[in-house]
Figure 1 (cartoon, rainbow, N blue to C red):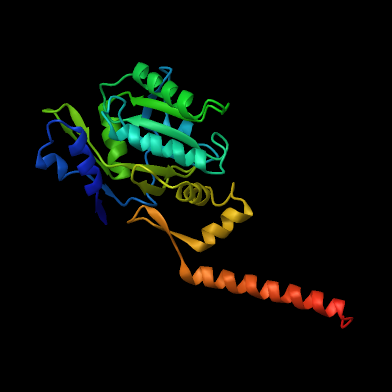
Figure 2: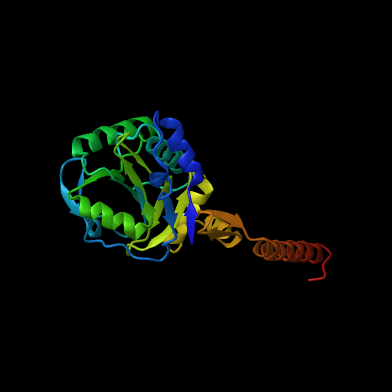
Length: 260
């Protein structure tokens, strides 16, 4: 099922002095590719100018993947700002529980631009974090970015008239096998949704007891790109808690009265 990113289209129209034509706007959407595996042999170049393959980046923890470009007038920064806020608002440890990879969709951008953008975000949001958890990368050839975008279901367009890319606002969560576990829509993913997505992608490897309870009570909706509460599970959990509380009270009462 295809989710048209109308909100993102409006944002692109706002920041552009010359609106992209309808044919570009109509091609912007996010296809549901949850469960699909991306080609991990795709080559990228990091902010230091070193080449690497996606297979080398994926490890024992989930990867947050952001498709953007570094000279984007507004939207890409909004997405990465929102992601940064979600990371800081979560109880997860960057570099341990997950890593972040930004891939430029503009084949003309180089590692120098990537380095400038990385330094900006690390200094602004993560100056106290010692782990090098966020890699900013560019493509070594345009065919790789097309392949990766297609496999993610990330559909965007370049408008030569405005020299801008019109694209949706979304972040992807990949598991350690390179499978698309989740996508979170919008420029401000909630810390709760972000935490739940990472914990599900890791099969609960890094989840606390509280996080596991949340995973039981919330269900991921791939069409909405977010989590919603599962009323039946909440009721079941409430029932268990109530029974436990009653059992504890009765045990204490019977013990106090000398019944047991």
